Image (cartoon, rainbow, N blue to C red; front, side, top):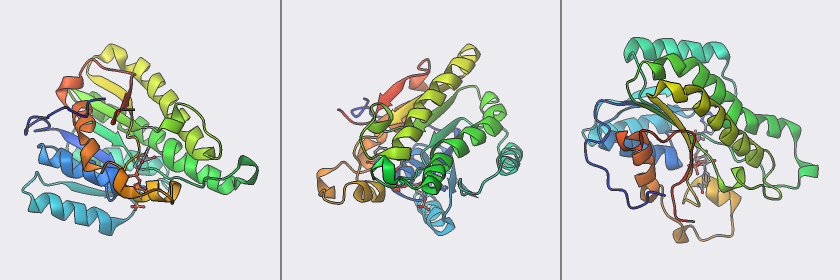
Length: 249
Ligand code: NDP
């Protein structure tokens, strides 16, 4: 946990970083924070109006001009990911970071009542989509001298919990895929792959999961950014295949 990490203002200067689910919650805070530290941020998400708001905020704050990439993991195909790679290659020529943050909660419900279509939907958005997007973007990550891929996990991706169904399973798969990919790229020395559990954070998803909780008792997305910055910046070089937490446990 790097909650006390203080990032230099220019930590991410010259870096091109893709953030998925950048329109809301933690992804929105990460996109704004990365841009404030000098990154050119590619804002990916399914609701264009939200991405445009983040875009405008970055511009208004004088950050590097971001890019918007509309994509819904539910319907996206392999061709979409390869078209995306081609576009990003043409525009930027490389990628220095991916924050896999987009996520779907599904339903907190006993497994015997879990709807199979919803299960597939959660797996699609939380793990299958991100996996194939990563495959298509690997050449761009390899074109960077120092690239960091961060997968967003959860405490239920490290220890299973009753009623968390597809969400928990998708996060276990996220941890597993992170380890497989990290091991495969270890020899490169220029690409690191890690997972990050944000911990309880004040967002719409958290309210849905814990409707009885007072959101004011939780850290805001902005407050958990130190670990996100550390993982995206050069100081985390050499850390590969590891599980991090953004908050003290
Ligand atoms: P939010 O629900 O606030 O934000 C999720 C983001 O993902 C939104 O921008 C949403 O877009 C996007 N998204 C959802 N479905 C899709 C899709 N099909 N295609 C593209 N984008 C999509 O959640 P949080 O900010 O709380 O969560 C961010 C990450 O952190 C998730 O991976 C979550 O599992 C994880 N996490 C969160 C915790 C918390 O306490 N908040 C705790 C542990 C883990 P749109 O706004 O358009 O719906």
